[in-house]
Amino acid sequence: MDQIEQAYMAYCELKAVALDAADGDSNDDEIEALTDALDQAGLLIELYRELTGEAK
Image: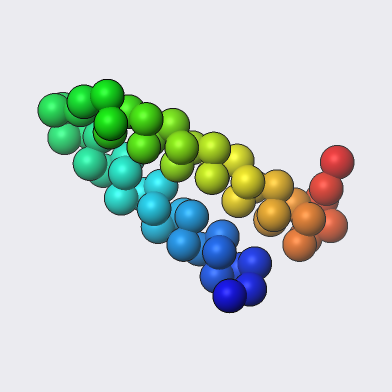
């Protein structure tokens, strides 16, 4: 699996977890999953910057 596929999978996971948490009935596991997904989104942003030459 290449980096773009990994980034897309992280995005899909983030979207699914965010939609689940937005149902108004979040529990600690959902909040932890959302936090993990947000961490993955941060990695996705770093990957995008690296791939587009915008790395810090």
